[in-house]
Length: 514
Ligand code: F6P
Figure (cartoon, rainbow, N blue to C red):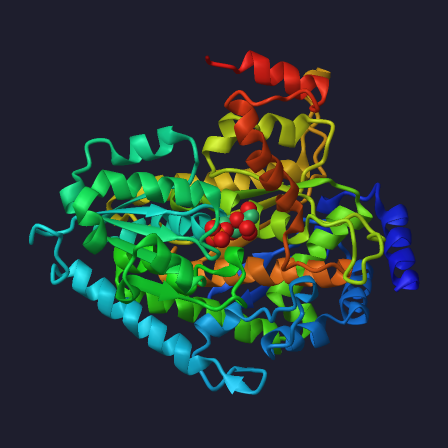
């Protein structure tokens, strides 16, 4: 591997001053540095990666064992070593054949759960499932946090053009304001509450769930549903077994929207559309497993990430969907990417030998243009941008808006690359240019395309993690803060804090409302 890293660095050293724009002297640059898969296009031609660098990057992926690790993941091996678990979220969207885990096919259970979800969703959507008073259920409040919230909340918003089910609100924050705002002017008599928590121990979710239970009152018994892999805990909470949708511990929280955690999406758009979403994920899985590395979209997306993070030393990357309905995608990808790859030790416990996961951030275009693009164009840090845009908008009567959206998206990647010399020689009007970006283009934001996008980014994170030699599927880094929060509750309520550091003591005093 060392020689590969060295070759990549030497390519960078000799080409750092070369303008990205000059790479387009080669008329084949766009075709050669873009990948198509099932109606989706990834253009990475506006980066500084040239043919030589790409060859070394692909060698790096191969030398790191991406292909064998990929098959280990799809094959149900326990690649999440620190938790001794397989990583099989891909089975949730698998549409052909068996998926074996320790010799047993997991597909019959997955299909049975999907069928149960569909029966429930259809019955709720067509009014067969009634509220405690015999009236209709027209509202849903979904309670969960992290992977039990970000996926369904992002998905419901993304598929807004297909939303023909009940209104769905999401509550995640332990701040009582979240539940208060979500339940404002909502009639508990007409509301189903979903409690989504893989572990059913998460303090935010359980606190909000208890609040929702009191809000529903006697209706709670028939108007609450749980989604969890801890069935004894959902029962202890008081949710009857026929209202619980379970899933296995080999589905990581941030990879879980393909199964029961995706129930709010299914309620919103119906089971058929939800299956189209799964189909999109499955199509990306097949592409990832079978396309040669250089024509493989998740692999090349990962390798542009490696190039920017490890060779160019860019510490962050911006995700910029030019698609208002994907406005929750950056937050979703923050968890997917940063919780997966924000690690400093490798699988064997030794310190990471390369910088790992970058800071991931962003928001929908064009809004971001009027907020932080100043820094993207003229700031002192170079930030690789990841644009997303549909060929066709979802608002047929407002097609002229979509033309403007497309023009803005393309203008930004072009401006970042080209820059501009000020004719008046005014330094503050100079744009340095040569700033890299990639663009993901899809026909339309359908459920299928959403499935492709999410699976694409999941596999990107996986490939980067394999190259860095880290475990992308655990999240021990969230533990310490959780434990300390639990220990601090009595201190917030007035218990002795004398063994705390000066700052914590001072803040406890300042925040003492008593
Ligand atoms: O923040 C840590 C975390 O464990 C995430 O990985 C997870 O998605 C989230 O909390 C919620 O966990 P649960 O679904 O068990 O409530």
